[in-house]
Image (cartoon, rainbow, N blue to C red; front, side):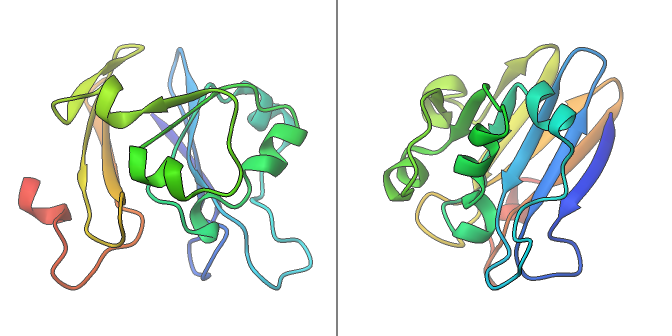
Length: 154
């Protein structure tokens, strides 16, 4: 499992993480940096086109505001998020999959990768994701609140 940080670490906004496995590449979040002259994630066109999924932690622009930009740059994959997150988003992607339908018990498998998710409590529909593959795992929480629900599952 290889992680490329395309934005969001050390800055408020532009949250975006590109994950590569042997058989799949995907993004977790794709936010914009409000007020920046280059607000989009630091992704190469090849990375954008190779991503098969975007997993969204929640609907705030610093986590999903670059979806329309991704589509204009060649992203043709599926966006995966909670139903409340989709209902709050201004841009409506053409290929979507609701977490509640894809992984109804809070976990499942996709391309040999185990996926777990749960509510983070940051805002309506906000979730955390844990991806496990080949003995490695990574947790993405998006934003969270003081009394977060993220750590109750670990």
